[in-house]
Length: 217
Length: 217
DNA sequence: CGGTTAATTGAACGCATTCAACACGAGTGG
DNA sequence: CCACTCGTGTTGAATGCGTTCAATTAACCG
Image (spheres, rainbow over the protein chains, first blue to last red):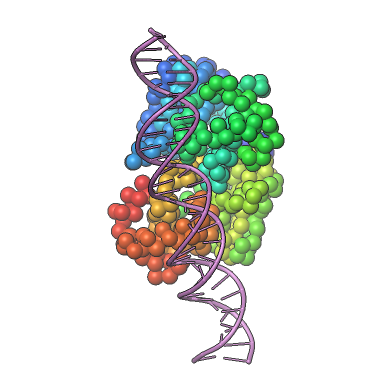
């Protein structure tokens, strides 16, 4: 077997077929209502998940109740891959959603299949890249830049001009390390400068790609 | 035994044996002076590295010159494993240091060895864990908590009561997403409260583990 | 329509930054 | 040994960005 050498750009790699096959054969589909918990922070890692429909968020709460969102997972994305034996972050259905899940034990039974190992490794590497960007965003960006980066990411995720935001302001804030008020102010500001336009709370359109790109770095 | 392993630290992540073997056989040792660049941000990923002596930092600069430190790597740690084909972060010798490096191509020649693949995968997962903690630190901790977390991490890295800090204040600040002044103030504050004690700038001792632990979460 | 939650806006506050001055230590040469 | 310098770290005062608290508005759903 061979892992992901040479290194390719994870952004170009989509759903790894070998893994999808195993998940299709061995995995069960489970539906979750909005805000329902898929697994809890601190729970043992048991399953490997894949989003079929809807969006999933991973969250972590500290002792004082401050919440940090790890990431948002869209249809096709793998999640639940964690470095340790227990979940550092919990997972919740953002909207009503459907996920496919398979026990790690079942995946392990297929170990030896090179393509499968590669698929899991790829997913882990993609996770690494997301986290690197997240660190950069949280560490050295202003509120304005954080929000711009977020909108940029959402816009790049879809091809249409009209971008749908599946999450509310609180989720955005907890991802960006800000408060809802600051997020709201920055959105108003960016809209006032005609960088973006919000026909409704959960939907926007980019009007000035240059400025947005520059702000997002 | 061909490899110097100057590690007495239980928390430091050691390179898995299969990988160490390959690096010993195929890898070259290279020495770097303090602040010398090991590889640049944006450069192609060519080698896999392992710290032999000294400490390495990974850094990323944005357009405005703001710097974010990804992590610090100690003897025994693997670094240079990145998710994409090019380095998102550059690597520099913090102090004078010695690293062992092996081309990914050489590692690839040994692919097929299950233990080796597993070793690289393990290293990637450890990287993931470090990043998860970093995200949490940057997103939802106060300056006081950030500095406390940093000291906690440094203290847990070694068994002795006297903890050596290999990096300066600027490096600490750029890791924590703060300024040197704020870092300095928090250190003075924690010392004033007898949580820690600094006999010199680069060396400290924990006096109140309970408080430090609580601050670090 | 109300009833409820989510989002925006305003005003005051506070934490971290900024800018500036000062202290300290290490290395160098008189 | 002291004076000098340079780099690094600390401290002070003022500013400002983002938060906090509070009130208002908008959206959603019966």
